[in-house]
Length: 289
Image: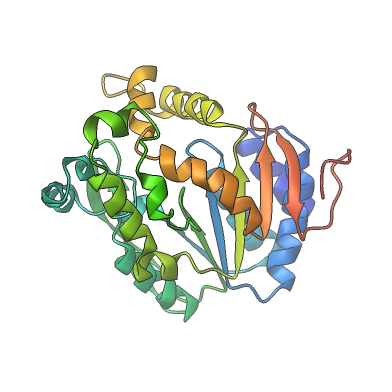
């Protein structure tokens, strides 16, 4: 006998150390939407540290354990191009050695995996080691997937009008990309068919950060939790690193809520401040809409 959905959600949230009760109500409604709807692919995006990867893991477990579904998940973070390939991209611009922005992912490979899983086929996907900054082998995802979850910080992003690229958004762009060649090339990659086809999903969930300063705090918390030791970045190093993502992140904060099916707005402490979309639920206040 399968455990109840409430039991599985409670267990999974406890394991993820999520204590905000709003997540329970939101997950129950989201699971109902996913199970009852015809959506085969469900996409999740949000800034670094927003909790999207954690939610994908929780949702996958709930769908499998409480509903007996076969669920596959794909992360954009596993489909970075190899370090060698990104080094070769430095002929386009030296900033492409740093992973993360459009152009540094093997989106064709991820799209192949997405299509295979949607067709119910098994597929082999890479595993990326962020410590090594390179791929570290592969893993096989089995056949028979009934739902496919995709997550990535820029999933659903759209290109910026070219005139908006003229002014740097931070010191990183001003110092390392004064002529705007790198940000123009990133924008061209994002506008390309490969990224936009990959980003096409049946249902899109977007985690909206309160501001960019909160994103820096969240990324610093992640670093302290997962990357302890000599390879850990300082706060100033983290700030420089997320500067590569700042332009697209800030654009998504304004643009994604107008297009996503479900927008989960977060407070600085990661609690849910508001929910906008087509889910019907209440979490003890009038914050949902």
